[in-house]
Image (cartoon, rainbow, N blue to C red; front, side, top):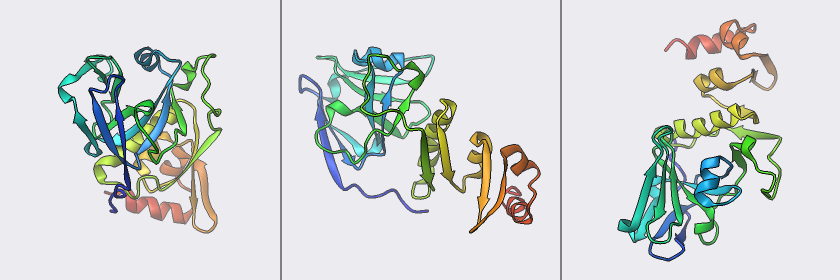
Length: 221
């Protein structure tokens, strides 16, 4: 399997008082808007925009001892702040242990990612302006094909969250376990549509010979 793309640059950042300084390799993995009450309260804003970086590609270049951490026991999420000026620094999710989210406002210059989706969009405040409406649909083409094995589940977790929040997604994937859990319909295509069915029908009783042969191979292990 291909490795993740090599870093192309560095984006540096700091807290308000300057005691905590950090940098991430770019391009970052993802960027998103968070509308949850926890993010709004942590930032004192209508919503927060985060840039997600692989943990191993983030470095604290000064002030590490001045970082205060708060763990929310119920969800397992961890938020870090500057102990001097209280600037929010990091947001960590238990389901993505290899990733760390940094508030976009801390980082200078380009990060290689634009915020393309919203988490907890149902909590969007009337006073919030996000620049663009939430997209009507998102398209994914083999979104995990170039990732290290340990990163695949983290990307799929984000997609599961999007599906639960009602985002329409069209996904080209070989991750059949993932498709069987979140898809509404499964379409099998080889220059032409050979199967178009509800996921229960596709995985349970496929009609076409091609789909039957395909599933007999991948579901036997």
